Length: 150
Image 1 (cartoon, rainbow, N blue to C red):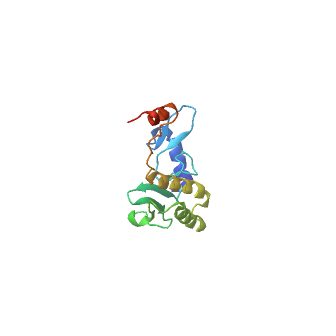
Image 2 (image 1 turned 120 degrees about the horizontal axis):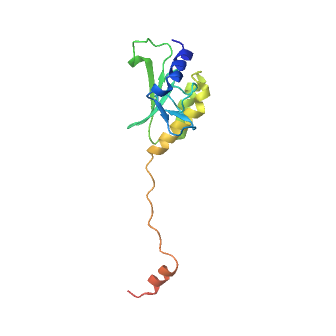
Image 3 (image 1 turned 90 degrees about the horizontal axis):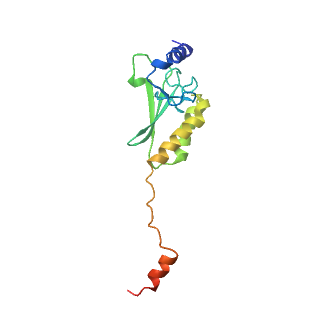
């Protein structure tokens, strides 16, 4: 089935699509489908309608990038996907390298910025936050503590 026909069926069944999220009546329509990098319900970002999709998810071992192989057999689900992972502390340069590899091979180069933004956000979310330092006492309270003999 062609990707245009798949999108047409997804678009017509807007009220019956389990991935569609409508928050505001006149606002944007979001999507929770796998492979949708911007989470927008549009043909360009659809992970179901396009033959080439990148699914970037959070995993315990870091960020996992799953790409659908275009020439995979329809029945072979496990071998139809190529997976690569980014360790949590590897940084944005590693993420940029992996995303650029897919774009250079002609694998949806139009989604390079969306994929890099998703990977960078997930890597940043996995970093441990810096500990908050206790606030220093300043002004009149600090002078009162210094002046008081203990």
